[in-house]
Length: 465
Image (tube, rainbow, N blue to C red; front, side, top):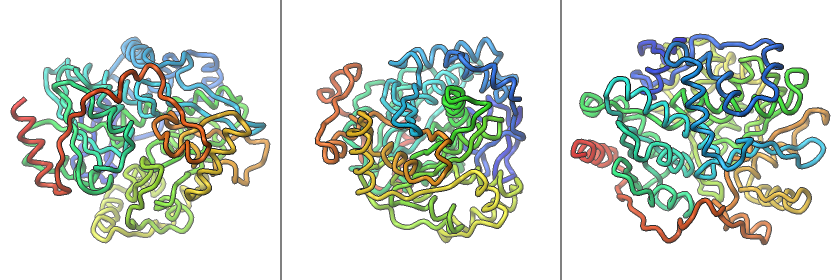
């Protein structure tokens, strides 16, 4: 299996190469040259498999010669053996058509664990073959940072620098990052928004002053291996609801578009999916793009759903490339225009390619709170605010009532206990496995929202380790 950049001019790489590279050298994102596809019979044979075995089946076509099946299975068993629920991603029924896919049973209580626990092992495996070192730079709106740090803390050959927007993540999210004491972990709080942090990270990947001195890698969903691992839970839920004979819809609370793009990949691989609902908060660039073709970034509005407070959704580029005819040169020009003007119109081909599967819904704070109350009072479920945005979008769907809708439950409610308590009157407690999170000492560096300051900190700190 070979991978190509969405912007057309970076060299094609194999799975090991794209895992370690993260972002392509031309600034694009990697995608496989073609989508592997399972037959209905092959999907039916997946029913009843354990999660590690299902993950091995679904991901093996993407891995190629980089790992054999036994090796991939071993990594999956290690990664998902750390989850607190034996099903790894259990499916919970809310009413006759609404379902929750619980993705928060990993060590940091968020869906990012499903992919990042595996990605950390992939890094260690591939780096161990070459003896090289990898300097990971990442940006987080909350959950990616803690999940990535947990996945790579103490691992050989890897060092991580994680940027988060100062004061714009929840206290639990921040502490899960900043209380980890490992010599290869560096937390950076920057002035500004997640978009500012993400732009800095992308810039580092094409900064020759850095890349000439160190190999830089990514844990954000710009890394194909992370996105690939998220495809598995769509198969897990779909099989439980009757795939391949029956199609389901999925409502996905979305900021950076990676989680819902994984559903698109599952669809391309043959999983029957009736619809993918892109659920945004008031930072609604994706809703505007999918409904009117207007992909223009505004000012980020801080909300009770900080992981979705994003105006530039990196993974959307993958969809535009795949739906727009896979013309890397044309997309590179389109994205350069967007990066300059922070605004662009989708082409007719891009809009038509997305419209067959994707719809979107914008949810404000009041609607989010209403969904939290409905789940608590009518279904006995306490949700986090991001999941509530997905549930609101699912409940207003105009799909045929016979189609089950699965809302991806992206985080444990205790990570956002203030917002949950305001809406429901009930304050969720952190699971015992989190331990003494609030008594641990925090360690992080505060830097201005200035690229050179952050780049120099990474360069100088990594060089002395």
